[in-house]
Image (cartoon, rainbow, N blue to C red; front, side, top):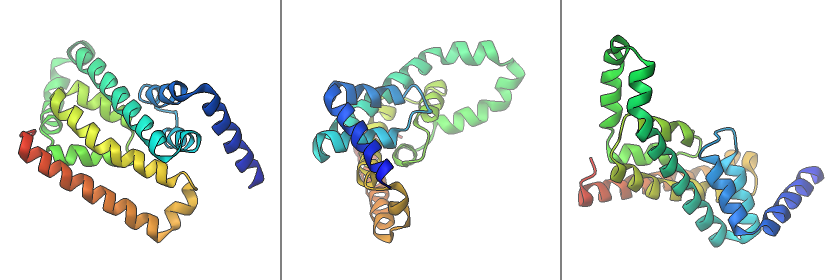
Length: 192
């Protein structure tokens, strides 16, 4: 246990010394390199810069990173799909592409807000199937708040939190709130 505490202290000090730009960059980089642990980076930002600044910094960085990744794959989607896949293969997956493209806004927010959903994969799929930019941006702005809050809250201890009924209730409430907010925004802005 002491080794883990020492390691976390070392990482927190390292990020603190690098400054907020360094903490921002780590979160941004995670949107492009899926093996990087977003939860760990959010927890370290929270430990290094405090709850409010760490969470806000992480939220802005992950939203920006996801949107850049989405835009990149959206730009490449035609080239990727039509150069890699044959017309026969495209015809087979066209139904799935259309189905995912037409995902409701509240469901997209829910997918984005789930802490264990691989953001990199969601960015790629949403970009390739060409979900609307406004819809995707609104979904990540709403959904990532709850995902970052989750990782900030869980920073005390991942294992302990997953066995603590209070944490499970709080996470469930955050997901319900994300879904309700997305429903309200969807009706107001007509994102479906």
